[in-house]
Length: 448
Image (cartoon, rainbow, N blue to C red; front, side):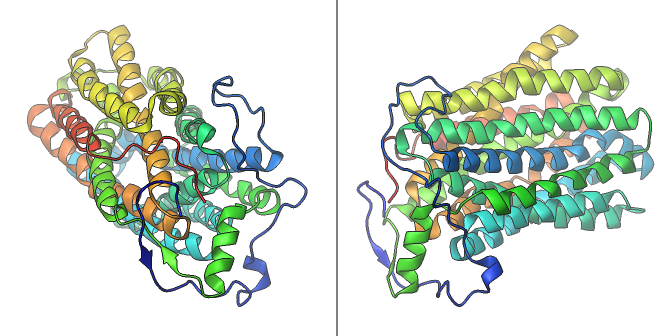
């Protein structure tokens, strides 16, 4: 149940936990229990003060999972120009491969969400990391477009499962007053992962082939061992799970279905804007001017992407959580999306490297920072017994639907050039802002 006006009941439980094998039973953390007691929301923006060791480990685990998800996923975008030459791919085909990954993420989000509601957040977080790590590594063995497509699809399943399991884990472990900031920290790790992928890919490509870039994608698998041994399941999930196991009924707010549709639609348009823009930015920057690009050298591209992530994406994510805790989730969500829509044309119209960097940082700040809002609002709308599933639908179904973005931008660019094609991303951000206006405000909601 949640402490806001929606109410209602659905029947059917998940089954008993005791029936599960011992190796998949939830871990408890008696020495450092997760506390949901109210804390001072006016404390320093990113202070750990008042948080338990378990709460800190939860944030670190979810952040590592999301950071390494970005690391693995964005390797493809960074080596995209190289892959296009190696396999003689058109821009449309290259976009289709990325679209395939996004479609798989929708399926993975639903699959891992259902399993996380039944078997636990920590366990499915670990499983999703293993899946995307193994199949990113497998991409390095690709000898054809078809083989690369299969690997991209399978890694997309894990990519889709990581976000909702991690978001549910954090939301159920932190109180309302600081939940936005905690999820902002988690979401900001995507920017760090993107920046690391740019550095790693740049270093590898300077000395080896693109295959070794994908081989580096196995590294995140090592985090799973720490998560399994040091991160507890949220007591909130365990209480609800135990109640359902003894015959309790599942509850869901009557307004949840409408909110789920609205949040999914908002995410779909927002992600169309993001994937359409950031899938193609690396290629846009390195392609020669005669082909509609900006002619950056490989080393210049690496530095550019690191700057965009650390000066744009990272603070955008972090500050969204602060603004959402202080001024409201919905208001911050709408403002970010609207300003992202305005920033894209400025980026597309820039010609000088300095201005391209400035507007890319602004677009990254607002155009990626809004993702934090999806996790916060979704976590506070949906009930504990179906939270991971609902988050998976609202986020990853949207990611699957937004699979049209890379294809659309790629196809438009072949006729009009990438700069003009980015206009579709600006329109998508604007539509997302309009959709967000219809979402409920959830600031102050305590999960129970």
